[in-house]
Image (cartoon, rainbow over all chains, first blue to last red):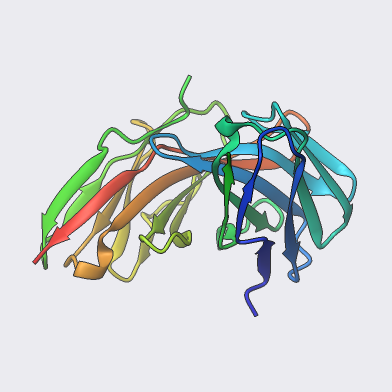
Length: 114
Length: 117
């Protein structure tokens, strides 16, 4: 059991359509994160959550919204997809501050906006 | 301003040799954590090693060690006895507190390591 799963793994969508990516965890971790990875930029934080219904913006949040209605699920929505949102999206989870075992990442979702 | 700086876009090393990947960071938080992740061509993010700001000793995990120089704000990853399977992207990251008291992980842009036979 991976502990964290992302769906879908791959998606192609058209410009202007809404898209929702799902992150599901079975670890009961408090924190959940959405990152995007683009060549030359590393991983950049889009949004994160520190509890049910508690979310905040990261450094590249424009054009994205999130929801967390239960501990195990964190949804990322592209309200109206644009070509600049073509990227690989990673979800990550972590437990409380002070733990040194790192953050666990999902396998990623490759999104192409055409 | 960039909080995590990895100045080496690409590095090459011969198999069985050691290699150092550089990372410098910037934070005003006295309590922080530094991480290194490996991303092979298959795409998954693999946690390698962690160093807490209050840790007195440099972290080690098998062939990985972290050269932590707090005053210089550097946290370089040392890989000893490189193997072909070490070829990958390597990311340095820092855990920092948010204004609301939660935490987040900030990444550098990465270093692509190639191990030559």
